[in-house]
Image 1 (cartoon, rainbow, N blue to C red):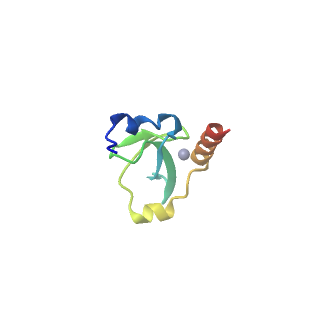
Image 2 (cartoon, rainbow, N blue to C red; image 1 turned 90 degrees about the horizontal axis):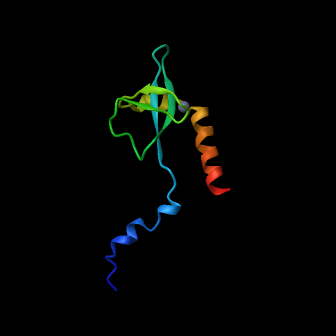
Length: 89
Ligand SMILES: [Zn+2]
């Protein structure tokens, strides 16, 4: 069987979940920052984006330390969780 049917790749549209990625955002006022969630598969180098919690923030390549020092944003976490619940329920 030769399965080079191009329709195969798009057959899963109905079950595709919305993708998001997490990225530490440094805070100007204090050391460390918060890890916000953003729409998309991964950060593509854009300099600013709207987080899942609705904040417009500046983005930059995070260091390893940024990941360690930045706890996940609880609001972003809630937003994504609710979207997942809605999707399944
Ligand atoms: Zn957030």
